[in-house]
Amino acid sequence: MELTTDVSLWALIRHAGGWLSNLRRAGQARVVESRRALRDVIVAARRTRTYLRSVDETGRTDHGEEAELSALWSELGFALQDLGLSKLAKRCDITGRYWSDPRTFDDAFIEKADIGLERMERLALELLARTT
Image 1 (tube, rainbow, N blue to C red):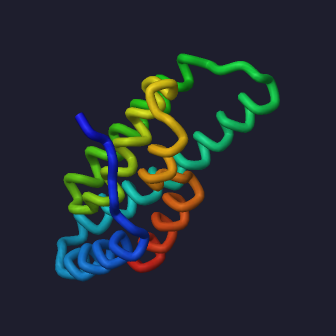
Image 2: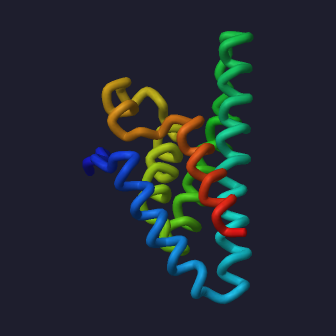
């Protein structure tokens, strides 16, 4: 199965703009669910950054924490897909697959997949700000 994504930041923003337009017409429950999912992306990015800092400081990986990160990012991918944020969902899915076994992904793929934690957090924060 190929895991690549050729979605540029501009395409992601355009997609998010359409999603926001649809969200404005959605019911309150969907708006609340969408905000929760976007907040969860922010939390996942911060949790992952904290784990990476720990690995940098100690030099030790924790397979249990990596399993948790894999599940967290995978669940976010499913939730975002259900909400219609398919491009952000795909990035979360790839991140979940990455944390299930980081050795299976090379640096070139990671860069092309554009799954940087800061970028995903920033996008989620921007979308969250536009939902209010």
